[in-house]
Image 1 (tube, rainbow, N blue to C red):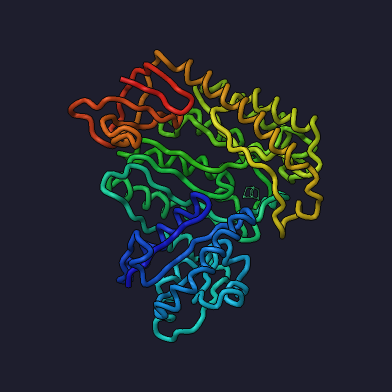
Image 2: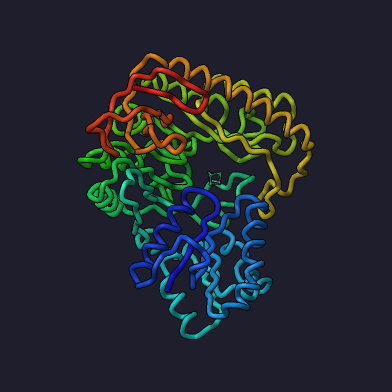
Amino acid sequence: MKFYIRTYGCQMNERDSEAAASALIASGHEMVHDEKMADILLFNTCSVREHAERKALGKVGILIKLKKKKPDIIIGVLGCMAQRLKEKIIEDIPHVDFVAGTDQFHRLPEIVASIILKRKHVVAVDADSEIIENLSGHIHSDNQISAFVSVMRGCNRFCSYCIVPYVRGREKSRGRKEIIEEAKKLVGSGIREILLLGQNIAAYGLEGRGQATEESPFAELLEELCRIDGLLRIRFASPHPQYFNEKLIDAVATLPKICKNVHLPLQSGSDRILKLMNRHYTAEKYLSIVNDLRSKVPEITFSTDIIIGFPTETEEDFNASRTLMKAADFDNAYIFKYSTRSGTKAAEMKDDVPQPVKDERNQILLADLAEMTERHNKAIVGSTLEVLVEGVSKRNSERWCGRSDSNSVVVFDPVPGIKIGDLVKLKITRATTMTLFGE
Ligand code: SF4
């Protein structure tokens, strides 16, 4: 049968959808990119924000007309929202045939087969430790040079604003051998860069050992991955600062294939708010990681996530975030205006920062960020960067583009002999806030 998957939310969801699609293809189904062609419609959902859930529920709800027209069509809701709401989804939207939670993706072929045969609703939301080893399938387009590899799932941190530990469950790491094999296979199929994924990735391999330790099985994994011939670059997301210990700092600083661009979620620069967020580090500790890495690798760049308007955030707390952001001198930041997420600890607190204040603080941080990015990009003009060639630029089909080690997009005029996946040296001649131009 023909299936279509719509994915909401994060990179981990994208990776899960890809692995699920690969499992369905292996069992004889065909993936289509137009939902009108599909016999099976799958929605891989996100629960991080209530808005994301409402959007997915709205989309699935209106499919009642389609179900009336095509009663044999199979509609499945997968992922975080399926895990959180379970059978309630089918109670509220009975034209949904099945829900499959975050640990049930590997059962999709079997669930679909059972629906075809019995035409009965299925609710599959148990925790299952097999999933992470069973979802290693990939789907690539011919010129693809980057791929996601999931190394661990779940999270034990329980940051007070976050729903992830409730919908993704506790941390589960994959075996190192399976990850290495998957990466080697990807390289064999033309992949040159991998992005390692995990909700609390720097805690890879530390299950059952409580808090962060001096060990870093994740740093050891990076070291082993770097030995794969033909793999040119490795990125990873997202590490919790509490697990960014000396061993990991040294691995990032010394292993040449690890990109010198670290995404390190900050969330707040105020120690009082960090405590309310249950983040287990201080602003000083965060900055010490950044400074340590920068002292070892001066060209390293950082990006981050920041929440503004967390309950009780004062002007002073906000200014602490602003000060830290400037001290860390980020290249990029994802700034989120706090909104209550029911089911989390923070939802017990009053969302008391008025919306206009959140909007104003958001604008201030965005302006600070634009100033930092522009300054960084201008400073690069005249230097030479190593760029992994991705192919034709989306904005101008006569030019090509690629990414620098620090994850900046570099646009250039192609010259004969250059191929997608090559590492080329480009002299940067011009810069805007978003793009570098090289030759
Ligand atoms: S570490 Fe990340 S995924 Fe885990 S609870 Fe905190 S914010 Fe959520």
